[in-house]
Image (cartoon, helix red, strand yellow):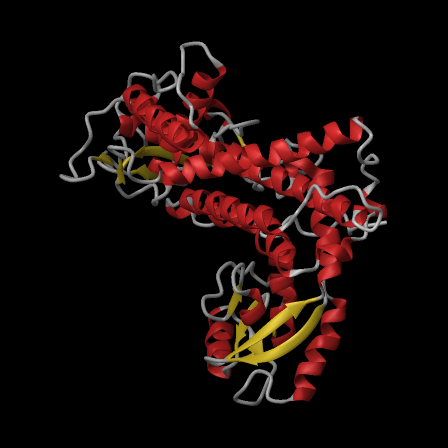
Length: 458
């Protein structure tokens, strides 16, 4: 049966990195070892060109590691100028990795003074599919303490500046206010994945961190706020016209209508759609696509910088449309499989523990599983990493859903997933159906963080 240690970190990449660094360096006092967050050139996890670059690569020069170790209060274990100077040292790393969360398969020297590390694929495939399909919407979330009121949990109060407090859905408000409201909602959803306990303003204490979503043209802090708590200002940038780069006069409702019309034109061009009467399913679909396009437009850049509205359909509309087109493709594929099971074409999907997951070890399968599904918890963690410095990397979420949709589209074109019923092909079909289920779950979770609804058809 495919199982995993229930005490594992919610973010396996964090744990892997810790285990890797511990092989090369040591903390004099392990009890006070800080949580490492960014590694720069030292360690890179890859999601493209895995054949050439490896699953991850590390700097080969001792100098890089000395700088990193000194910055983090560590002592480097190696004496040579190169991190892994010979075959024996590489074999030692491979042997040591057998104790890791996921063991290594190989280590090799890359150009540009780096080593390529490749993992054994079977343990990661089993872990990823098992974790996603068992945990569902909670995949990637920090496990909260059983007693949510535990006094040891840090508390955080997320507030929306009073300037935006009256917004009800943002239907008639200026677009920059709508953007700030959406940033507030996205951050609140993201915080459900983190270790903070969210509290209301009336429940905050002197130790509560206050995060206020504001506009970057507001004063640094309201004069009435004299509280001793840690105060973080999360500033949202303006929304600009594309040519003059002046603040747009569009309201959120008018821009939503504009982008919904863009989606309709794309649908007419691509699918030959001719009519979109009021109250029809197509109209509702176009509205949903329009909302998705607006969110992508406003957050494909860093929230503190100016976002640019899209005129004449040119811009990121293809991104939102493309993501939801592949969302619909996932739903259609799984719906078709279920219908063919009901019709007796296929046998029902066996339990995951009976699936031969080695059938998912080829390059496209591996890129989906390792490059995107495994890294979703790391993605969410990265968006919040600098929250207390007034930054939230929502643009990474937008980039993630576009790239995941693009890779799945390539996967769909290259793999004949719903094969003809032949006994020798059924194991492949079943393995891929489980992978498709996992991709759908993670894509839907990422969309939900952005406030975008998936679609069933297009």
